[in-house]
Length: 226
Ligand code: SF4
Image (cartoon, rainbow, N blue to C red):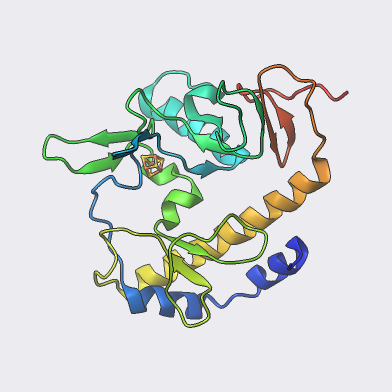
């Protein structure tokens, strides 16, 4: 399997032009349906929205929300431990943060207008995963590639989204490609840092999140080293 360092080298050398070609070939325009910001409801029940957010993005969102809503947002208002890997009672160890959700399971920053169109209340400061949806890059070491291959090499993937297939101009495709590349590099850098700092903490009470900055409690405070 490709090492994280090799995958990072590959990510850094990606051609934005070629990524933009792939995005342009399938086409995309956000329809503001809210599908990527809300819980999934199906016969199996409701699955809360889950989107990965990096630790520095949590702080950026806290600052943006403080300014936007003129109130003080703490870490838990913005992020929660990624549930994958945790026990049913929410305890255990996990390796990522997810955007916080509201009582309906939607992203805490999602707002729906009376006409049904969705809006992100922190649009300018939304995390990289939101800026690049529905696209991802299938590079070794990053999270599972999502969706169908867009290019012949299978590098650019697109998750199911009603905005796919719509016209996109070259400038927008290039901006999206640049951000997609940036996200992949960040993802791999985070994974390398996490691997360096990881120390199992089965002794800790409640949930523990291991991220690129160390081990944290669900409120974002560092867990004392043993
Ligand atoms: S931060 Fe904004 S774009 Fe991202 S999931 Fe939440 S509402 Fe949607």
